[in-house]
Length: 332
Ligand SMILES: NC(=O)c1ccc[n+]([C@@H]2O[C@H](COP(=O)([O-])OP(=O)(O)OC[C@H]3O[C@@H](n4cnc5c(N)ncnc54)[C@H](O)[C@@H]3O)[C@@H](O)[C@H]2O)c1
Image 1 (cartoon, protein in one colour):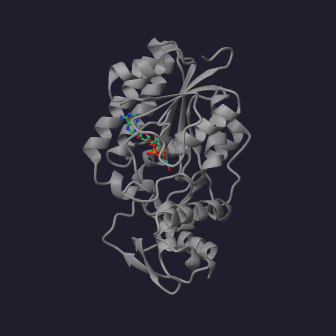
Image 2: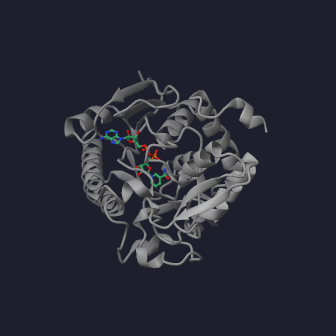
């Protein structure tokens, strides 16, 4: 029972960001219900309640939101660039069903605050065709030219949040994440994102060997460590700001530089083999944090080097548990 504590629902609580968010909310004294179609993969949830529900179904969304005051709606069919560029129909349908049902169920059940996790994939692609680009500010999502499938659905749902706020007074929050990474995130199987994939490849390679990089390695991105992501989510939910807001870092690196940072942490000397046939997404993408700094009086602080210094050892420990890396090789 929630008692006097604020009741918070986290959907996608079996996933990467949701799991970290649950840990933090419980630590901060909230009563947390986690919902997902799967249990967290790497450690047990800290949530006081955890329900396995498919949120594409309307009745399950009603069940998930009953008695809740705040909703962090993080559940989504998603993955890295390989996954989201190969599954437009499924991703669009699954995420539309989850989001439309979740916001309406939240309204019906009297939820006070509803947070929607949007993405940097909503930004117009024609503004991202050079590696050294001007960072993307919130207004750069229009005129619309988002990523196919995944990005279009996110942009549409942002609009739905504004309609619910306008027509029903539901307090909605729209956060645009820029590439979140850290321990306990998927690192293989097709849904992993670049930092985790690079950590895995570096961990499995022998020093002096070679690793495959998708694209020419000159495409640029910024990456945010998951602890900063969770901090930003809590700060946004405590604010009165209801327009879309970037949540990311503006530390821009090329994919080759990302590989070099991980190789240095691993103390390995590796050759890069660039595979131009693989999807690499937009040429360059960075977060303009001007509005974030103004609205939250804060911005993510953890550097890429610092964040990878905890992510890489975690992926190594997972691979070691599976006997895919010999502990002896790690000492070298
Ligand atoms: N990680 C990033 O870099 C990033 C970037 C931009 C946006 N986002 C958004 O942030 C949110 C969380 O992302 P994440 O990185 O934790 O991803 P994740 O894949 O680890 O977590 C998403 C969770 O949603 C669950 N889910 C999918 N379909 C479901 C369904 N039908 N019913 C119930 N649960 C379902 C999955 O099982 C998964 O555990 C997502 O909305 C994602 O689109 C993430």
